[in-house]
Each structure stands twice: as structure tokens, then as C-alpha cells.
Length: 174
Image (cartoon, rainbow, N blue to C red; front, side):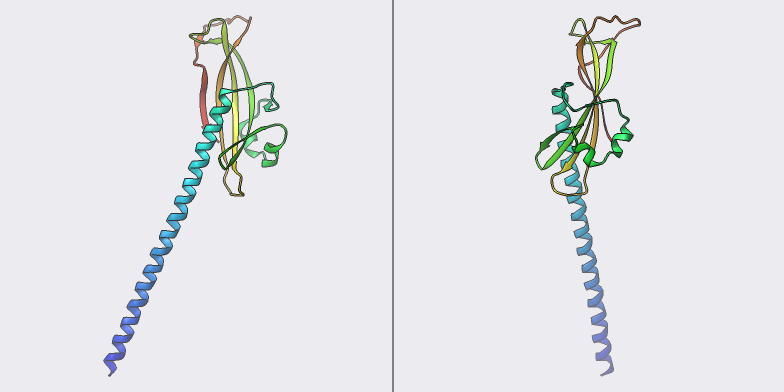
């Protein structure tokens, strides 16, 4: 009779161990699923930010209210969302994301010219874009690019000239 109690107790202990292993595996699987969903959401935001940045680069408008004085990237990173939503920045929407952007004129380089555009020099701009989801998620993507556009000038370069490509010169995530 004593042996029957030990067999029952041992069986119950093994069942509890198996149940705990099953729970741990289910929790691990759920955590991996959440991480994958977060990664997917971040990738969607990053892709939307890239699309927004490209569309702004194609239609730079310096007469808009989006132009601000040259500002450090660190200062832009510290700005609250309310600053971006104010009149200093422009806005747009891509899918379920809202983006805000500012343009900084970095100046004209009279020694930088274009291969196929005669009598034009390089005018540099920096675009900073902040992308946030429409729903209140804790997700923000900030990207920045430097682009060059052709501009006519009467100022002559006093040193050696170089050829630059039209459009995006650099890109980075902040």
C-alpha cells in the first residue's frame, strides 16, 4: 500500500514539472511574438520615414514655413513633439504615420558644380524628419538627409572646383 502513495506522488510531481515547462515555453513564444511585432512596427515606421524624406527631397521649397536657421541635430532631438507640431515645421502623412519636418539652408558652395548643368553651383540643404504613429504608441523615428540643388550665381570660385551629384548627399538616423 505504501508504494501506491509514492507512485501517485511521483506522477503528480512529474506532471507539475511538465506543466511548468509547457507554461514557460508558451510564455517564451508569446514574448518572441511581441518582439517580432515591435520589430515589424519599427520597420514600417522606418520605411515610411524614408518615403517621406524622399518625397520632401524631390520638392524642396524654401519659401515655406518649414525653413529654420541651422540647428544642431542634438537640439532637434531634444525638441518635444509640441515643437514639431507648431508652425516652424511642416507636416505630412504616410499610411498610419504622421510626420513633421524642417529644412535648413546650409548655403551655396560656389566651387561645387554639376557635370551636366553649366553655370550652376551647389546649394546645400539639410532635412530633418520626425515620424510618429497616429495612435499613441511609444515609437518615434527621426531621420536626416543632406541634399544639393542647382542654383545660378554670379560669384566665381577662388579655388579648385569639384563636381557633385544632384540630390541626396548623405543620410542618417538620429
